[in-house]
Image (tube, rainbow, N blue to C red; front, side, top):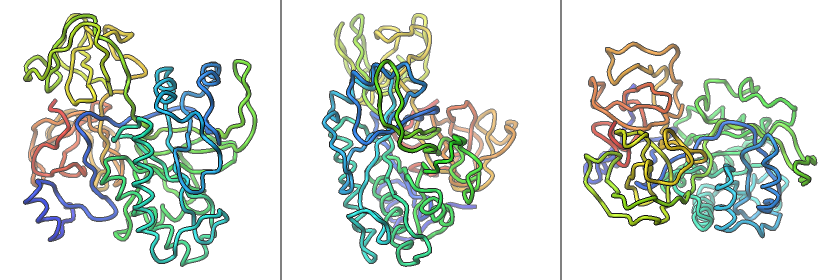
Length: 426
């Protein structure tokens, strides 16, 4: 299956060097100094974000991620804690953040502020831009995810259902233009079913992740009625499996919803100092050009860690928000031989554009394949690119976070003929 191309976007290829994609897979291009962040585990969400003291106490809980309401006209709770300082403090403790935007709701929903039945796509663009602005103001970087909260509605109302689908499609496309990953929170009995029905529709852009509400006490991320397991199959799912109730940890009681995630969440900056004067390089190796000299004890703004040539006791390299790299050996991160939590590994997710994409043990079709294949719409979590055997119009292969390789031809990166900025070379 070849990537769909249209005349207008073909002209964009000539001018900008980018390929064209149409719905359901729409393109996303990431910033140089960013990464995506994937969280796997238990989470909770609260109407009002807890204080840092409360989050400190809740480190005794099984949760390591928290949903935060960053904006939207239907957001009801005050958020006095949501500041850049709070984000820095919470993430430094190891908390992952799940940004939630509670904007306009379905015309047949119960919330006060509703979308139009005729212009919901334009409204979604405005709200996506607002969500991005609010995320950036908190220090939530491009490359991270923002989840649109679409509450329950009557899906038997055709006009209402179509308005919601157009809205969520426009939300996804605009978030992609703004270089964020698109997530949708929806009830399993309404929005999730409609998104699943439109999963391969050429009329709607497919979101990158689906977070469902189903208060059945079952935290499983598969076996959702009406949503095939092959949809949103690779680090693309969350489930809110229990609603409002109180839990206590470390002497602090909060009213929460329970969640489980294997999905993209917010990306942020982490600050660490250098032990000595170091160089930053344009890539994760001393073979790349030097970009700057960093004096000893300078506070660095790191976004993720990746691999490169060994320096001292480690092969880990740190990526700065400027898009340059320093060896981790001279940075005061906790681990001097491997990766250091809570820093994520550097990766960029892109949707796959073909069903049954093989993952191989190396960059070429001559390498043996892993068992199973990637369904269409899966996220390929790309760490780097390398040359390999030609498939379609490209000889570029993508190395994924699990160490497997896929041809770039069937991944919605910025180009299906050459390497895509800002993905590093392997």
